[in-house]
Length: 474
Image (spheres, rainbow, N blue to C red):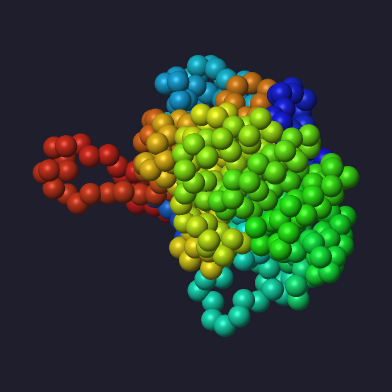
């Protein structure tokens, strides 16, 4: 079981994977024209400025694996050169990737590579890829359906797969998905999400969090037994909503005991509006490794400032992390509060705060986008964070919360990268249209946006920016 602390880069040709890791099949070369996203196989020429969009033809057959997948080990052996990328410190560099890691970073033009393994990133800002620490793949994409939501394994697998691919297109190369277990559906949704995880290997890393409803009393006995079975099935994180259990403290005790027994991290839903409950959690969770994460904690913003500050100090001392949801609560909390956690207060106390997307077009947020850059944008525009701090909350902090290796655009680090058209973090969070996503050293998703202005003297005189090619697309 992966520890939640960031790992130092290794120069081994095998990359670290954290939760839900493992090598798997790689995306094949076939693609079909559709929408605004596009997959691109590693080693193929790439054209960031194109005004066309493609998406990989990897829709899952019901109950089956993704089509068009090949050998990930062969894909990771490919050397890929990212040419002319801009870094956040203002440098323009070439970055060579091999074996799923960053092999070298040099001045533009200093790193030769075969022509077919070159991606021109002129006009793009190259960043460590985001990760999604709080998703709900089992309920995603259900807001527009008529009648009751289906939880058949095929339907849940389809939704979880499509949601993970949408989030991958936004840049998240790792996703932690909270999955409800128990009630009439039992472990079926979890099994379906685990199948989606296996199908997506090589494209994105998907982790399942087992989320029981009750763990105490007579009703909770079945939930506790099912939670144990969920861990044996492959849920690598233990979750739940202590706020919804008649005995929240007993719920915490059960979760922490099971997590310690199996060496699992804990990721709990809580509104955070009860300071006494949070104090008890901090006291109970302090010794647990690989650690405890709670969220979205919007209720902390409704507490008196001195009380919230005291709780933040306790969480920090216990090493409890917080995942906020700037785009709104998720359905797991039944929309108990709509305010975002007090991120600046928590950070000032030393709490590690990451940001997640939460609901993706389900009952919790019918218009949820699942876009980590939107979460960062909201923290920068409304949460009082600087642009760099906001992006760090969806990248480095999110990866750390998920037990994933640290990523920097430096030799030896994992090749988990996101290229976004723009020259500064603030510009990227403002207008993050065109994106190129790199997972384990190869391009796995692409979004190309084209902006053109009509022929007018004003547009020509102002030299307004264009995105895309001047010639017609293929």
